[in-house]
Image (cartoon, rainbow, N blue to C red):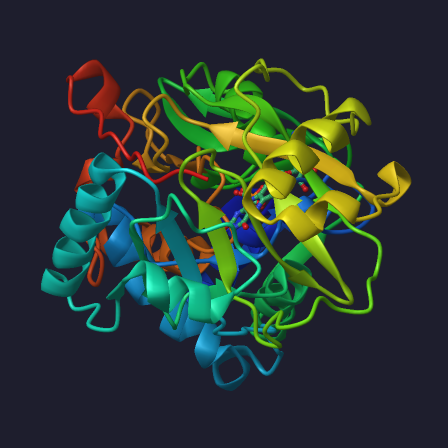
Length: 389
Ligand SMILES: Cc1cc2nc3c(=O)[nH]c(=O)nc-3n(C[C@H](O)[C@H](O)[C@H](O)COP(=O)(O)OP(=O)(O)OC[C@H]3O[C@@H](n4cnc5c(N)ncnc54)[C@H](O)[C@@H]3O)c2cc1C
């Protein structure tokens, strides 16, 4: 006889794990999470930079962060496991008037939504944070001290462990090969470990989400995009480099970095990168990113990088760089939790809450996620988020 579940979640990354946690917290016990890899974290979650920020430009992203960041701060209380949350802040640096007025406008919007601790900075303030920056062209910036970092693996496994304690089941090493439907209503999934009957199936398949949606005949505009991170070798410290370095973002190029162990972890969105599943690290990227690093911090020209310690993973891009959350309009019982466009770690708590509310109550109770339904693309309601890193 086929196994039955109240809800099947496809994918046990940070998003599937958060949904399992929030569903079991809402009292749904028979939740089955299916992961094709033999362990969790081999998708995007294990590749993430772990950055969390509320400094966004759109209301819905700001609200998702206002729910999620305090959640990371009390994660241990909620799950019994650490999140590794470090409130080091994100510091955006502007070099032209349009970037500065963008930061000003965003901070007013963030403030109006309840985020009261975003400060606008002068060039002197920024120089004080990091005297090694070349600052002759910096005209100001913004800083939010509760932005920072988490440990994505720890958050993912913490969510899942507590969900399992409350009755959820995790199948590893099991691939979902099909979604069963009858008259456009979900009835379960087919897997390499047999069939499962379930009235609700959640697509939490990260960069592979479009293929999973197609299993039910649904269209989901999510594309994978390679993203590379460069880790420098440990260095003994530059004089004056602060001990509690924030994430620092040079808006003139998009280059940004944070401390990682005794080195630095750097990222930059290469405009030449084309969508696709290629996820190897390209050693030629090191020179490109170090050019941006040295242009902003001359001392960084001498940083040593071993390409074998750098890595790449896949962003899951949606057309408007916002998550796609909620029921699939063409298939009853199928839900999307996809398209995070590089923000799936930081928005995983809000996503879990939104999906659990939609599944259990048919509407959201804490965060209004109407703007994030997939219908927005067909209805011309796509949102533009320009504060993408
Ligand atoms: C280099 C890099 C840096 C990043 N930095 C940040 C950051 O600083 N902050 C931030 O918030 N986000 C960041 N992100 C984005 C973040 O990592 C993702 O948005 C997030 O991890 C998505 O989580 P997920 O659970 O949806 O996907 P995943 O972690 O990819 O999980 C999806 C899972 O589904 C499984 N799966 C797929 N198909 C099937 C199937 N048919 N059957 C069974 N299982 C299946 C996969 O094996 C995978 O484990 C970064 C991403 C990358 C690549």
